[in-house]
Image: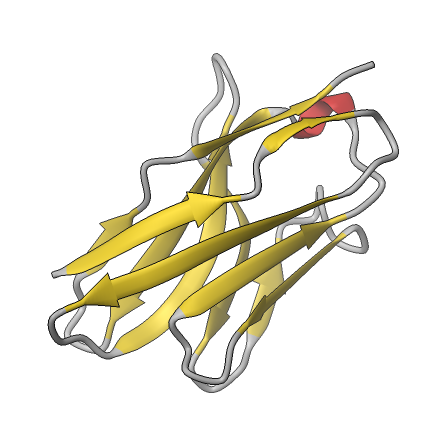
Length: 116
């Protein structure tokens, strides 16, 4: 079992920046993928960015160039640096983790609101 705790969400002005963090903990696990998804009202949950154990990163086209995903050396914390934020980035952002035994976990979500 893996528990995910997100932090860093909040209100930011258009053009501003936020840094989200997600810390994973559990009795025993081997994380393969860590990432972020988001869901805006009336929209499907969508990929923002992921990073996996080999180090491959992928980004949604809508955030490419404005977002950087990274994780610590222990591979238990994932970060999402978001820059030049737009109102359409407003959503609940969910941390995502999967493990080498194909288990999937979701964080509770953290609200990001981009508004003046």
